[in-house]
Image (cartoon, rainbow, N blue to C red):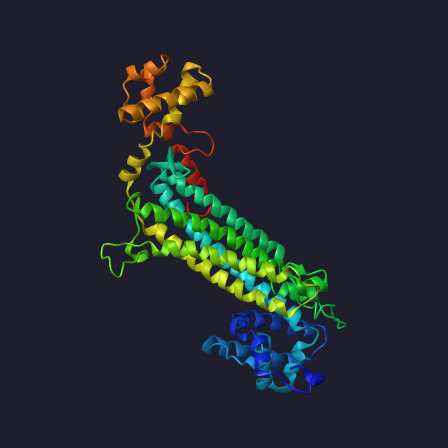
Length: 458
């Protein structure tokens, strides 16, 4: 492979540390796709003849069939997927195979293959995100009026609806999809033809190969073309943000499935038992999604640390860009599918959620708002009055709305019987009609909008 420069071959240890075929073999489809585009361009430009073109294309077709049927054979002496394809092509068609590498280097070759792979990974990830969004929206519609406690500091704060809660995660995922979409647009420039680092003297058509591979244009600088891994980092940054959101949702499922909460029961399909305690129903799928987020973030940090000190252009360190990328994508794909399955199949206990929402004096803010709205009390004074009412309820061991009117009037004489129209959890959620609020009518309106955005209204 290295031609006449070296008198001896590499040591066994060098072959082992240098080889990447064990993990970059998953790019074999992309390598064949890019090779087809490259040789077609070489022929169109008169750099290789028609006979060589036909022979190379037939050989690539056969390699594609072999790899699809039997997988990629691994030979550490051939280092990577690019040399495996080229070596097999030479076995099949002879010396003509050597013309395929005209006007390209493994440097622009790997950058092109990896971009093609990442582009496909983005599309797969976005499809997984959409599937989870659909699951969330379906359950949100089912529970648009199901009252549950809203928390701050994990303390009961104000009542909301379960549908509103699910839509919060829809919004997180909407931003996640936008990050991946932005990354896809930004990365969609072809490095092919940049060669090793300086371009090539052959009269190649980089615009033609870019369009043939679905890129918008060729990259503008040959040095940047082969040294750039921003597109991998963009994927990993976006994956980390998405994994963070999945982890937050997973944590809530773990909490909600616990006996102290009792908000839901995960299906058998996404639960496990205990080897010693037969009563257990463990939320292992949610816990693993939560755990995977750390590994995905670790993949992002690993590549940041690899790239941070590299001079232009290509360095062998960059071979280590693929393993964290591949692992992150696999974990993210699995996490998205598992989360969608859990959301679709979980059973929610509306009675239990309502009971907790009614605890902790969760409608205290509604009392303060009523004083402002109906009695003209400044909010800070209303806040103080409400605090005294809550203290009185706690002393009597009752909920806020269970205090008799006489007791409330002792706290604040301007309170009248109308206060009981706003102190129930149902009245509280109905009153939250500001844009983006939890009122069921707004939740249903938002659901209709997101269903249209997801094509679920047909």
